[in-house]
Image (cartoon, rainbow over all chains, first blue to last red; front, side, top):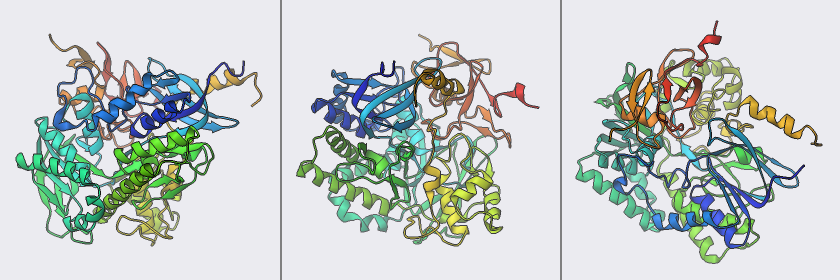
Amino acid sequence: MATSRSEHDAVVVGAGPAGLAAVDQLVRAGATVALLDAGHGPGGQFWRHPVPGAPVREVAGLHHDRSTYSRLVDTLHTDGVRYLPQHHVWTITAGEHFTVHAVDRSGDHEVPVEVHGRRLVLATGAYDRQVPFPGWDLPGVMTAGGVQALLKAHGVPAGRRVVVAGTGPFLLPVAAGLVAAGAEVVSVLEASPRARWLREAPAVLRNAGKLGEAAGYLGRLAARRVPVRTGWTVARADGGDALTSVTVARLDRSGRRVAGSERVVQADTLAVGWGFTPQVELAVGVGCRTRVDADGSVVCEVDDNQQTSVPGVYVAGEACGVGGAALAVVEGEVAGAAAAGRAPLPRRTSRRRATLRGFAAAVQRAHPVPDAWMDGLEDDTLLCRCEEVPVGKVRSAVRDGAVQDARTAKLLTRPGMGWCQGRVCGYATACLTARWSGTPAGSGTPAGPSSYDPTGFARRPVATPVTLDTLASYQSRYANRDL
Amino acid sequence: MADPTFLFDGRPTPYVEGQSVGAALTAAGIRSWRTTRLGGRPRGLFCGIGICFDCLVTVDDRPNERACLVPVRESMRVTTQEGTGHGDLEV
């Protein structure tokens, strides 16, 4: 009974913009597709839907590009598509075909599921990049994406008095959404100086639609008198059992904190984000070659057809370079068509992809993570939230010569060894170990030969926790088979 | 019609259909529902999308559920999780 389980022409992982676009192209080419996604419904982090009873709905146009979404999601009802929501993929193995190992979490107990495909499209997306600062583990300090998810999906503003901080265009819709939902946004702190944005104006202007989007949010914030300060950052968070105040500080042109510029702001919530970290562990696990992108993230290498170094494995969207939903859709289309054997792509598509990638690169250059966070750390600031590893422990291990890079830090002092497997602290650990061991990452855009190496943290053989029951089930299922 | 409720540390707490445990608690003004294993520090929602595992909570006696992902169900019993949530196993 080796293959009572169905085989598909392609398996797509992730039902966000890239994954949905890939499925659409595969279906048009007549391919059979399985689409696995961890979410309750399609759309990923970008096209989130309000839960049935959400008290706040459709705030501040948070659900953009609806027409693309509706068109793509219609495909899921086509014959030949097997859509599997609430399926968390934990690993992928390659043999004569690819086997995607998932757990179905739609019921009370997880159920192991295996799905087979001749081709694989990985559209696993990204999550907010974070860096530590004193007090960042206090309840009330949240990622900007988490605040957005609470609002978009559940209709709940994360707090009443909110500071939004970090860097990148994503901070604006988060702040605008909170204001529209009735929260008070004390201020939006964009760490980048305005001048940096202007330098990237050519690429930005080629994407005038994006510029209009940002202007729309700025207009809405201005109408509600929400100050948007460029060149400001969060220095620390304070409170007893939860956040009560945020210390903010001005940054100079080189991204250093200006002494004496600190101010204390009363707030119950801090939404913070420093760009995004792509989820590449499934691709890494199946052997895809990675590179370190301009923003310091580990991303998958892909060719013109979005194919990785592993034949038959395609990656689209943030996992091959953070660039936003519009780029993800184009890359998903290319990956889907190529996986269906329909390459090469039309010139119009490749031109659009190039333009959007140009915009993404400009955004990355305009929004580096300034070094100030590394200067503001205290010895007892947690670096790893899961294993509660303080900064001082890793710093002294580097000084003692025991630790030279992120990987040895992980092995000897435990950052990244907990539940999240270094998803939250991986970037920070790589930056700090590089700086302390004398090969600094530079002002947020690590490049060239240095000991900045976040790749050690990108390897996660089990991508999501599964029960021992799930693992044990393999023994009974494979007991009578030659492996 | 009144919102349905679930129990948080024994107290009836309202929620709306489809909401996650974390969202319902946030809407009720509750910010933390776990203490850490080592420092006993309070934790609640951080990433909000299932990545960080900070919002772990005990749901119907099952510890280590992610509050940001688990949808609330009528009369679900959610309790603050201390440490690993397996208090009975600790020495």
